[in-house]
Length: 599
Image: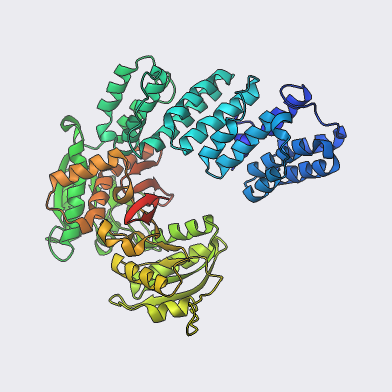
């Protein structure tokens, strides 16, 4: 959080600097307080140095030392607390401002109030604060006003109003770099909004505003499915040939499309298409082919598929190379990946669909992509700490999977300063979790009174399948522990509203394929369902896995050219780490009335 300091992308803050100047020149504010210059200057230097907490405390001291100017300094203090990310102190400082500030310091009060509301993710309240004043006409104040209004409108779910504010903001930007940065920011806001549904221009909207709103859907297509985006982008440009986005945010769009669709001449796909893991291999293959079919037929690579369950995987790999493959995708199981790892030192890149053991050395041409539950456990640990719930308990299954998931969660939580107060293991087929819940949450039962639980548990982490999650959450509620927030891995979510009534309130990370409402992901899901109508819903994630495996091929090929090592996939935001492993950032959802809602 950077407060209004970030609005103009200055090296130091703020509204503070803008409004100190405004006060000193008697703009629309009161005259500058007559505090000794050296004391005031010292605080302003702290602002310039980015030492926001110290600056906030300095302003609070000035407020106490100069009662007539208390409102002015309390507002400056609140601004600096926001810039430093301490919203509790910012709220305290802002609450101390008198009602007189609405008339004596109208602009400063409105901007700081809106800034604080926006930092608290309350776009409607931020807009209400800004509605208290007439839009400023001094450049710095006006830029802050329109920036806050644009951001607040997007948070409040009013994208058309947000676009109008960003367009108005451009009048107050003095250099090309700031103008471009503003448009890039607007583009990102539009894309995020378009992920939740179409952005319809209001009647008789200005063509600049309409163009930005229509660009939202195109931006999602460009990011999530460039194989299908070129036509949509060309159509948008024909509708808005003079739109300012063309010379700013879209200058690199065609290059992005080219990079995202740059495939080798021949790809070999190595998967188990018979035997014990056939259903998973078939799902990955079908998702891979669905992505392949999204591409223009004239530019598709040649694709050969090898069943590594019907012949030794090393033999299949060697045959693929002999057949002319210039890129290999697969195999799928850990055992098969380990078997071909020593063979991958040649010039042909290999995208393995699982991870080698951490201690296993690999060649520079071997890349690894997997849907690992322990990675999800680490994501959950980071989220509970970010949510301010650093102490809690865990309930995980017995066995090797539970060991991995439980250890990953506990290690990441401890690394971030959290504490796992207790943990319990359960058998996979268990139906009654009462004793386990009583132990891990120290449930205390007194006859004739409601049960109580340990007060220091701020969350319960659940790992396991959807059936186990339903049982655990219903029994948590039975034992009067339903008030403790429950976080889970994606396996605990089943995409069936009728199956999720017992897990209402559960928080979990998952791939966009499973929880996103954006139209591009929906189109991809529909294309897979159309191509493979007999698919099994329980293996949906493997279809998505195969789809993204195809999309990763250009990303990996582009590494030598310095292309950005990340894409927005249907399995998550995918990026390559320093060890050639694909890491996923997932979307967060909460079950409400059986439906996953953005969280």
